[in-house]
Image (cartoon, rainbow, N blue to C red; front, top):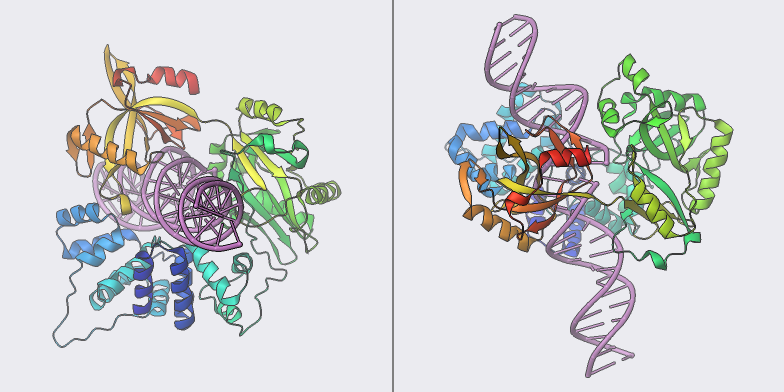
Length: 531
DNA sequence: GTTTAAACACGGC
DNA sequence: CTCAGACATATTCGG
DNA sequence: CCGAATATGTCTGAGGCCGTGTTTAAAC
């Protein structure tokens, strides 16, 4: 645990990416198995302990600290693990020389121990650790490390050890589990490259960059293909002799929630890996994203759900066919392979993603702006010769979403942020005007926290401090005097806000210092325009 | 004791 | 998903 | 031609709303 703690501490204080890579490489070559494997898993976010959660840590901290003091400290520090690590006063008996637990010990214990016993063990560990190890232990339990290095950087460090490309590590990663012994053996030249063979493993998908500040006139329309950008869930369908899977783009296996799709894959009996968009399709019509969400996290869908919200797939791409890896082939060739595969197998509930024909990008821009129908959020542009590469390379694929909508809203409340924003009021709840019994009042429609620069954050923070009318713990109510232009992708009805509406992807587009609060938008106008 | 509601956690966008 | 910022690397510019 | 300035690419952290499932607290 001490070595891991030292690593985290150094990472957190090193801004340089190259230095972080060096630190990681050094740690990985120095630390023993299985510790280093669990450290890697922690950085990659693949550790989760159902018996130990942030709420439990907060409860433990409360045993030793005045709740009020703890709340203020947490508010100030902005990070639960750091707060508890600092505030914890170890209770030690005399002549007792406590030994901090090893990383592998911690992981094994937390995985196996009955939930009721976990607080006692964690308390004992916290007493035995110094501040730095305590911080590492707590970070391990809270999950998100946020120490300036995440999964990708850790994998890059491993790749450098083996003198291979980071994508090679990414490729073998998903067939493996903590503590990743085979992976370390490979990068140290002591073992073969791990091979998933015919196992139904996840392949890192290719993602698109947003099309911003890109000069389309420099593009040759003949070299580009266009498709609709569907508002569903990007999935990878895997069918091998060893089994079938439905993966999300972050490798979550969601097959249980979509047995209808899984059954189709089984019936196909074709050894393929497909890329597509999962949607709820009712008689050929794509249902709103909310319907898909209802099915997404269910352990198993009810019979009525399977009937009323049937899942369907828009096929984008084919990665493997009969075990052959097609990813290095150009998009156009893969598309031909996809079409011929589709024609041969005729899979039910799947349709090919339509290739939109266009003469020039002006035509396409018109299509994009008019694309406000259900289920479509814009266009995808794909270069005809682009191979399928993992990650989000700049150049081959672009997502060209519709222009966001905007509304002028009034700041009502502000809240302190976390982490590096813990000393700023960085989240703003804003509202629109509503007239009740001749009285014009503000009702909240959402919160936003991004879209402003650090400079603007300082202005907003000061404005909040100078115009506070009430305090509720970390939240401040402010005078009705500041208008924000809020950009958002869609509006929907919601129970979350008093106004009954909510925004999808809200962000601050502009601070309207010039606009009096009274001239901000009305809820009624908003609903008429966007719902 | 059992049912109901609220709060938290998670992963989708 | 969004966005801004930090760092690293690639490219261009000025001497 | 080389070093400095600028542009571009990649990665990171901060956090929004939604629905489901789980756990905890409150009400019956």
